[in-house]
Length: 309
Image 1 (tube, rainbow, N blue to C red):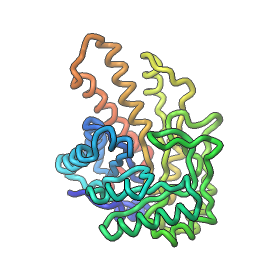
Image 2: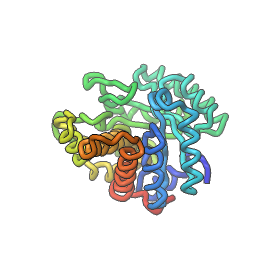
Image 3: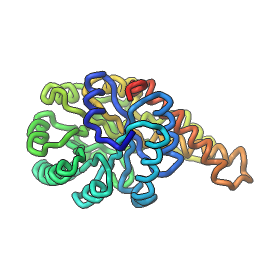
């Protein structure tokens, strides 16, 4: 049991036709809920920390909580930086003990994206750390990531071979129609499986990543709306589409919004039912359980990673 890179995880996932959940973490209860579900289902898991989470909880606290989860569950886990936007941010995480980092330079030109990504890859690989990069841009808002619909762009398959070859990156996040946040689509959700298939043909065996892949579970949206929220029309990626992607080259599926919705909906309901309670342990406990149940559902019904640890 240890913090490990994603190399072997992705190899097994690609060959086995399943994906590994990369769940964003912000505090102890979220980490516990995720890893308890993974332990019970014997599933590989990636815990990822955004720039915003590092600023909120402190990178050292989060890393030590993840290390505690490894000890408690007996599972190997990857600790991943989500959407590192600069070389300096990635370097800080690499030097601090992360086993995987994402450099997201997708808002730059293709040439500049290659230059920045290559710099991170060279530094990371010299220290035994793997790197994810992004080609194409997803619409939506999540922490510091804020891309309008007008600026979003699908990944161009004709660019992937050059990008991977020149950067040496270990996995690639692509844009095929997923979106960050809970308000994802104005029409019917649709993923561009033709783009995914084209990339798979160009890069056979290469691990692909989907960001913005929460399904925005209606149960929690309804709970939030019922108890004081205002989220009309929130919707995400249908789970059957994600399962289809997981059976292809997609080895890592990022899930964040569904965690936030589960926590927020459960806490809102708790305070509605128990307005005089003020002990954080009382309302965070059911929130932790909600995260655990949601992650277990994803592992079994979307990712297909149960029993694969």
